[in-house]
Image (cartoon, rainbow, N blue to C red; front, side, top):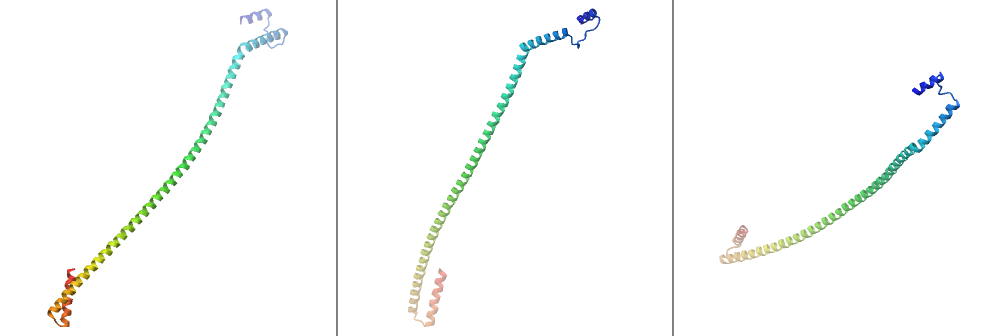
Amino acid sequence: MNVLMILVQERGEPPNVFALTQNVSFWTLVIFLLLLFVLAKFAFPPILGYAAAREKRIQESLDEAKRTRAEAESLLAQQRQELAAAKHEALQLVAEARLGADKVRDEMLTRARTEQSEILARAKDEIGRERDLAIESVRREAVDLTIAAASKLIERRLGGEEDRRLVTDYLSRAGEAN
C-alpha cells in the first residue's frame, strides 16, 4: 500500500487501472507473458500430469470394471451350464434309480411267484399223499371191519335183519373210533 500512496502523492490523482494507456498495457502484457511462461514451465506440467494420471486411473477403473463384468457374466454363464448339467445328471440318476428299483421289484415278484408255486405244488403233493394214506387207512379199516363183521355173522349165523344190525353196529363203532 505504501507504493500506491507514493504514486498518488506524486501525481496528485489516483491512477486508473482500467485506462488503456500504452504504458499499462505493455507492462500488463509483459507480466501476463511472464506469468504464462512460469505457469507453463512449473505449474502446468504437474497439473496436467495429475489430470492425465487421474484420467488414466479412471480409464483403468472403467476397463477393470468392464473386465470384471465380462468375467462375472462368463462365470454366470458357466455356472448356469454347470447347473443345467447337474440337473440333467440328477434327473438321469433318478431315472436310473427308478429303473433299478423296477428291476429289483420285478425280480422279487418273480422270485415270490416262483416260491409260491413251489410251495403250492409241495402242499398239493403232500395233501395228495395224505389223502391217499387216509383212503388206504379207511380201506384197511373197512376191510378189517368187513372181515370182523363177516366172522361175527358166520359165528352167530343169525337172520338177515340181525346181520344188518350187527354190521351197522360195527361200522358205527369204527366211525366213532376215527
